[in-house]
Amino acid sequence: MRHSMAALSLAFLAVAVVSVDAAEPGKKQTVINPPPTAQDWANLAKLPDWSGVWNPKITDQDAQIKTNPPPWTAKAAAQIDHMFAEEKAGRPPPVFVECLPEAMPSWMLITHNAMEFLFTPGRVTILGESDGNRLRRIYTDGRAHPDDPDPTFHGHSIGHWEGDTLVVDTVGIRPQAYIAVSEAAGVPNNGDMHIIERIHLATPDILHDDLEIIAPKVLTQPWKTTRIFFRQRARKFDIVEGVCLEGSFAEKTDPDGNAIFVPIPHQVGGNLYAPDAKR
Amino acid sequence: MNRRVTMLGLVAALALVVGVRSVAAHHSTTMFDHSKTVTLTGTVVELHWVNPHVSILVHGTVKDGDTPSDWLLEMTSPGNLVRAGGWSRTAVKPGDKVVIEMSPLRDPDKQGGALKKLTMVDSGLVLTANIRAQEQPGLE
Image (tube, rainbow over all chains, first blue to last red; front, side, top):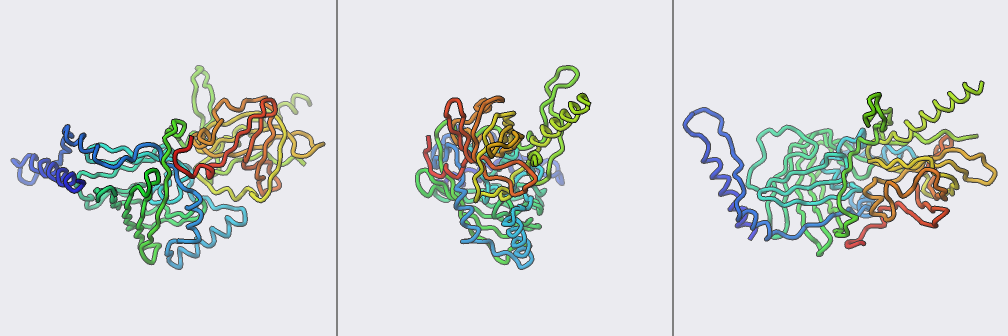
């Protein structure tokens, strides 16, 4: 069933490519995304039900630090060991600073926050609660990756359905994006990272993201890991706005009586400034 | 003299307000000593209901006989706290009397901690902040 949908998508893409103006030789072809048909919308009903809100199994993230560590290069391993030592000493190194996105793959690897899936024709969208702009667009319309995508925090993702499993291929991720095993231990991927995910329901309300992370600058071989998410349907679990930067501003009133944000000094690693001890 | 003291107090208070709002991004919590539990009894000064981390400023003491002073308690995000149950941006108000259990900062020069449990003295309402307690589907 999924294959037929993929074929349908490819057919639409072909129509889109054919429909470009061929009257001007040498003109760069404009690819038009065709408007979804009623059948495209109807086909979404055949996909597995991933509705609801998904929150991560953080204890398993924690456990895999020891049970399934990434195959770090010696250089990366030395940095990670130092970070673990610093964290153990009560000086956790800042990894995710100034509210920059956790990015891929760390969002999937070490998030403490909820996410949700949206299915629309030709696309799966993952929305997260944190960082203010945590969003993954996974194109399932049959397109290929761009030849030279602009590096982004979440990369360029294309996906297809194999049965009830969404297979996602992601490239074009910023070299600064961390491969993190905790909020205090990770190294930037340093470029050329490629991530393959197989996202599927393991049980009716437990979702697995089987990741294969290929990062030749910091890993000696592809790293496979599974991350686990729990489905919640209670309304209190609904995703809410999570603008990370709001903590970097104070709420003030300007001379005109307007309610405004005023930037305030803040530590790069996100530590709070606790009051000085009174002794 | 009195005016000078007042001004110093205002500056200190402003610095404090600026400081406690200074939160950025996600971080480990090992600056807190999770092997210890310190109980703080006092009065809420302010609840900072912001992402990425909510915090509460409390004026109180951890030992009988101490002079009351300000402590900062850090928690998870507003969204995660709502799911933990009972929390909202108006759940705790300035002036509320509270008893708080926290993992204290390791830094002996600072008065802060990670909040484990808050009990409202007047109502007996108990609020917690452990998102690892939510690891099963279909929670209500």
